[in-house]
Image 1: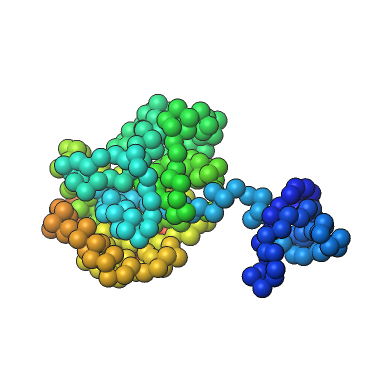
Image 2 (image 1 turned 90 degrees about the vertical axis):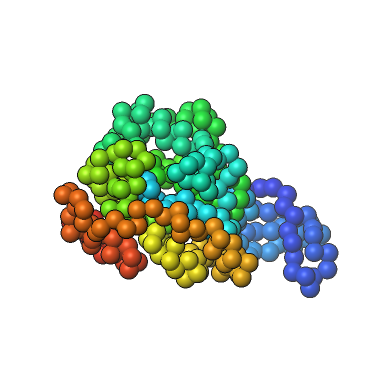
Length: 316
């Protein structure tokens, strides 16, 4: 890369050098930084990570994206990530009878996703949908973000969560790329499909066979659109029943300190097992259930992303 940047910069010298803060005039050539020292009349050429100095500070921010089907425990996962230091913002969708501890979803993001599904693509969250390849010709990202006032949290580690993201992830990859050059880290959340179907039948009166099709569609889209990025997969069952181990694994994935005793206690209190309904649903109560669905879930439970991808492709 070739560049030439002129400007006065205040450089911080090592602590063992006197007058640590001094004004110098610098020129950037490729990967080298040439410094003309006005005090000593000398020239120094040193290797410099000059991009760090010319890139806005916000570019150090790391996005964390939760991907999972509706009623799959993504809100519980978001609550755990929040206690590990992930910031989801302040203007969030409030709690509801079906989600009493909150959704951890930015209001602007949910409204924008609804706009995309309904008004741009003529779909809804509970209807079959695949993002068309020509979506860029139909979506004006700057106009939409301005219309809905989308602002990501100003935090070094910020989170994004909405089940609709699964099927709209290419759009959000571009939105996040405009915000920070850091590649998002994805956490894929999978719940037993029979439990998801039973939960949606109870909450939305959605036919269980349709819910099962949607479960496959969401998991497939989430897996396919994140293959080039850092990611991990876990199950709702593991989050509830193995909270200490799962929280430590999440912390390692995010490069944050493992939860201390206070954080572990807070996570344990937050993860109320009584909020997990439909856990007793038989493994195969639906005519539309396929043995491949077992393979998909088992791969997620084993944290095996390669096996998950193979099972999903076989089920497609």
